[in-house]
Length: 356
Image 1 (cartoon, rainbow, N blue to C red):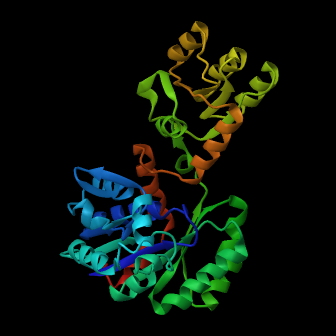
Image 2 (cartoon, rainbow, N blue to C red):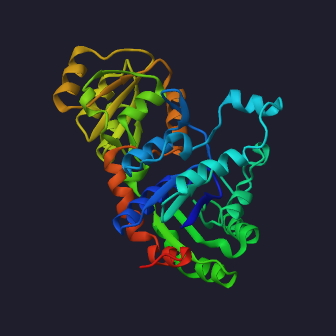
Image 3 (cartoon, rainbow, N blue to C red):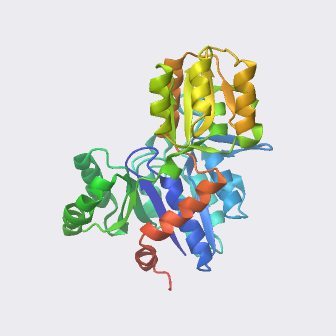
């Protein structure tokens, strides 16, 4: 059995995408897999057990039998951080190691999901780089290369930390214009420094999308119609702060969108409902008139009413887009498809010493 530790240079770079896609691929090839997240940051309770939302998601979509408590033995909460600072929590390494051993039993591969980079965990007495060495894991590191120099520098730093354990790099959400650069100059430079590129994943509108349900929950809004459409995916956003003629021209160009508009702008609301709109977000705690509500029900567009103003709502939405969830069923299938197509699975198996 060989573990694969999946880390990232920055938060929300797509680790869950890789874990899900690789996990399903390993299962398809007949390997027995486990998923292990040493430290979680999205608390969720199952009975009396505190675990991590991502772990519950992986457990469900990959039909895993390990207990949520073993799959994520340490969960970060504000209270837990205070306990650490007050000296009430000792080193977590023993707890993490024991849970890992239970998950790894009778497995061919364990996919380990790092919380951020390899240097994380010192305040827990459990630096991730030490855990990698203790369990003899290989490392795959992911990044969204917003700044090319920092991304390359980060990959070189990982190589210096773990040496030959570093299987390679994956770059995610690449814009079309950058793909050739990474396939040529970046690949060549990293190879000269002993680092293979195991995947170049292009920007994908479906994976970047958020569901209407996620929008409702993040904004604390009220759904007033079409609750059966909450799992529809929103790919773009429009802001209804213009005259009707301009709004119509603008909205016709954007498909699968949510429109954020003041609750008193029925003219813009109606214009949005006549184009490809997945939901209306009405600000100012104002409800639509009967004409708008009837039209929305007729075309199957949910309306979310929220208390905040339009500017505050836009800021919340932008924050939500930074943390992309894979929980929608259509996203799961898309994630598996993309990872199977774009990630060097044979190279990963070879690095892990797995038979093919």
